[in-house]
Length: 354
Image (cartoon, rainbow, N blue to C red):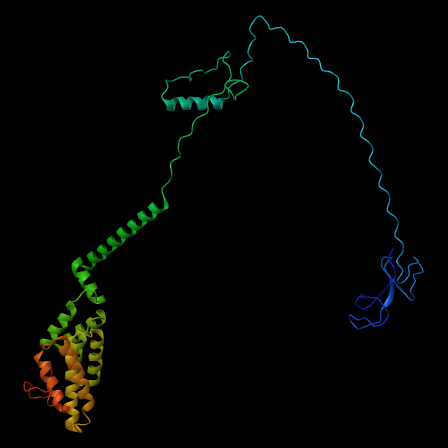
């Protein structure tokens, strides 16, 4: 039994003195008797049902004395054992126990073992078992065929070996596929490899299609030259030679801006090409002479500066190019650098179309 306590009806917090709940500040604490299920709210400090009072703890009952354990009973005396007399040994030999019947699967296992071991045909030695033979240790109850020894297990193929074989097979298939494509195309393998290397920029040299376009250009067949050179410019994106001759075709047609764009693309493809730089410098030099005659020498200065730049690149790539060196001196003379211009320069006329 417990004493009556003061509890908040709102949050259930107990308090030592009457008044407002200090936990929630929502209600006044009331008397509450916890000795009932459920507890009972009281109007006063005493519970009329169980007699509990506020602040008065009921006396606790005295603990019950634990009884002392009973003393153990004495064990009764053990009777003396008398060994029975041993029977006298029999004069005759005792008969052995009857042999256990052999199982069919044991017989089959023994026959297979004898066949693998190279024994002669028929039943294995010792079969059927001799009834008078003692049983082997650990095999009570009769004769059993000996256990077959298991051989070492052979390992399967490794994963690495399978992957190597797969890669070799794929490479062979790829080589065969390339050879079949070359055979269907009608060309030799060497020609195809060179053409592929030139298209990717790995193999240097002039592609055969570009050579056909240049030959048509020099022969005056400009229609064939333009067709071959445009196809070569698309098929060999790292070669700028076809663009140089396409720019010359545009100059002949009077489209200077298209010719300039093609020459810039040729220089971007082959930054070390002396021909591409010299042709672009010739283009700027000719444009500067035309602007100087139409407007003023000062108006042609930007084109002269660009011409000087590309002539210097051409001479760096091909120092023995006398034509580029002569026009470079002409540009220096027009820019007012007479000391740098040598006496070996040409008449400084506009560069003729080639």
